Image (cartoon, one colour):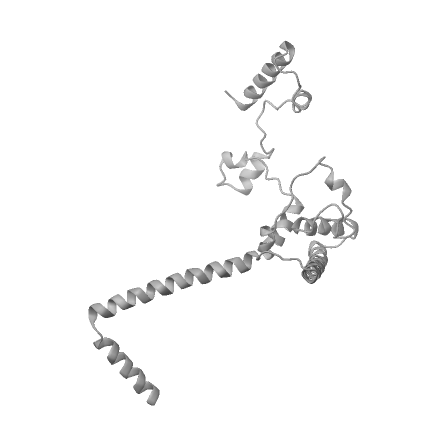
Length: 226
């Protein structure tokens, strides 16, 4: 069965369930699908095959009829930013929206927003605003947004450090950071490896005797004297 037939069958069955009262609440997608049913034709790129054949004689018809690639200006800016700042992807982000209207509350004449945390998407939207409103090139707009991003990140770091120092001054106790825990775990692993290496070395010495160790020690003393 084709995908379009599957969709129409789902619409019919949903209509029957609503009419018989088996389903009481109308699904959120139901009216939208009824108003804009899926096309019965495959969505393919409309191209002039004759012209394309002359330009690319070795191109197959299958590749000519491939769907058009959808590319937005935001994609290029976003890709550039995260390629230059990969660690920004490790920062926690809130992706849940209460009413899906968060974009209406943002005004990108400035990078810092009241309803949105600072992240790579802020740089993307600020860059687009500068391109559209200030008529700047993408490189110029991105450079401005990137510098503003750095200044706000420094400001956030200073504010966080100041708040932590004030809290410690009043007796607050903070748990260890992820970096501190990682360093401790690494030190423990190195200590285990050191103990294991010493044990293996001791067994090897007992197996092969101390002759080799004495020769090595004598050679070291000779190097020191020289």
